[in-house]
Length: 305
Image (cartoon, rainbow, N blue to C red; front, top):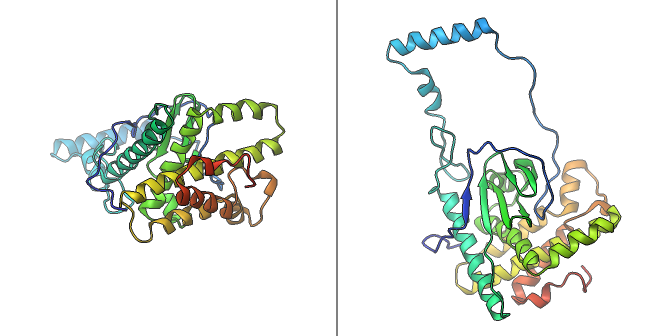
């Protein structure tokens, strides 16, 4: 994907290093099965140990050696898939990953501004929040385990900076266009929100059984995949895509299908619990949007999925 040197969006909030906390709400996005955390609680340092460590620190400080600086330095890593951090643990706003996300977001803005204009409407550009570890949204608390998601209450897309590494290493979906597909999918939920589709779904599912809500959620997610495909079509027409890019996105869609994720995490599938669609469905609906570039082809509610 030839993304370097192109316009970058200003609709970015960089909260990396922000310790905000709260409680989790709902919104469209990628959710992966998690296999138990590595949380620690319990013991701490005794007063005597703390005093001893302070004395050691002061002794070295008097010798001109700053132990804190030594521990802080030398721990940053570079190269693909790693963000370089400053001394406060924040990721610079001008790192390559940030530039990539800004560029992809700008491309979605160009696409949907044009499509909405053709419909006689004005497109409201969403903001994308970059965070690391955890943050607060209008839909509640967001953590790395949540995965990328869109919050309809504040019209923002939330993306943990470590997600792309997880997508590549854990789920076998590498490539810049695979990453771009994730962003475009979440922007697809924003488009659904502006068109009134998402609000209707959120109201209707309050009266649905869990099984029916899951079935409707699948249609919502597959439509967001199709909308991401439409963005891919317009991006391809600009000559930005390279050989193999479409295959990267299709592979990503397949790797995060409900059936594939459940097989990977628990060894069997429970179709009635699907809420994003199977691997085949997700890839097919992305390709459908990519092939047509037309909103009319993304009606997952009137057509069989």
